[in-house]
Length: 363
Image (cartoon, rainbow, N blue to C red; front, side, top):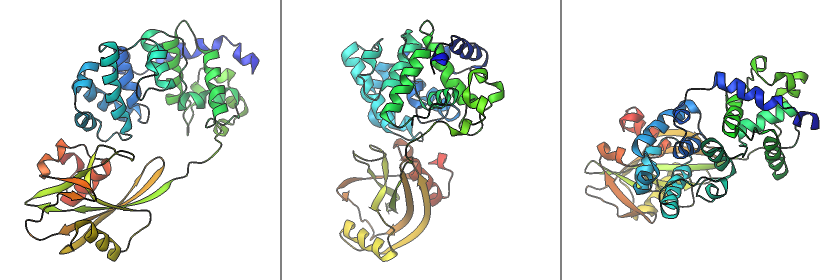
C-alpha cells in the first residue's frame, strides 16, 4: 500500500483525464458555492441525466440562498417532486434559513462552518469547500469508494466505520492539495463514467497501469460490503373519495417517508389485507360504512429500504358527504386541475394517472 500512496502520478493522471473528458454541466460553468451545493444535494441519490432538468428548474425558481429561504416549504417540495428522498429538499430549505440568519445570506466558506448546516455532511461539505473555495478536503462517495477499493484492492467493507475512516484517509493522502476541486470532481467523474459498478471500461481508464483490479482481472470483487440491506414490506391501501368533483387528500406527517407531501386517504398495514378487512378498516376510519368500494389498480413501489405494495380503491359515499379528518389527519378537497399545486409522491402521481387514464404529467 505504501508504494501506491507515494505515487505522485495518481492525481496528475486523473486530473489530466478530467480536463479532457469532463461533462459540460451548468454547475461547472458557474461554480458558485450556492450552485455547487444545490447540484451536490440533487445528485446524492440521483443520476446526472435525471438531475439536470431538476437542477435547472430549481435554480430558475430559487436563484440564490435568500430566494430559497423566502419560499414556502410546499413550494420547495413541489419543485423537488419526482426526485424522491424528500428530506434533501426539507434540509435545503432549513439550511437556507440558517445561512440567512447566521451569515446574512452568504454561503459560509469553510468546511467547519458548512458541515454545521442542515443536510450537509462530510461529503457535501468537502465538495463545496474544495470546488468553490479551494479547501483541501477529499470527497468520498460511492464512486470514490469503488474507484479506490478497486485500484488498491482494499478488502475493508465500505459500510463499516473502520472502512469509511480508511477510505477517507486514503482519499486525503492522494488529494492534490493545490487543486482539490478538480481532483475531487475527477474522482467522482471517473467513477461515474469509467469505473462503473457493472461495466467498468478499464481499457480507457487513466489509472489502469496502477490499478490492482485491472492487473488481477477482478474488478467485480470490489468494493466489499459487510452486510446486505434488508427491506421492509409495507402495504398501502389508498382510497379515491370525491365530493362535488373534489378529491380528498391529506398531508403526510413527520417521521416517515414523503414527509410534508400530499396523498390520498390511506390505510397502511404490515401485511396484505383481504377485501373484507379493507372495507372494515375503512368503515372504522370514516365512522360509517361506505356505499361501495371498488378496486382500481395495484402497483409496487421500490425504495432503498422499503418495498411498498400499493392498491387504489374508489369509494362511493352518500351525496354531500365530506370529511374533516381521516385517521387524525386534516382532509383537504381539491379539483383535479389543482393537483399540480400540491407536491405528491411519485407513487400517487402514477396511481392517479391510471385512475384518470392520463399520463402522470397531466396531473
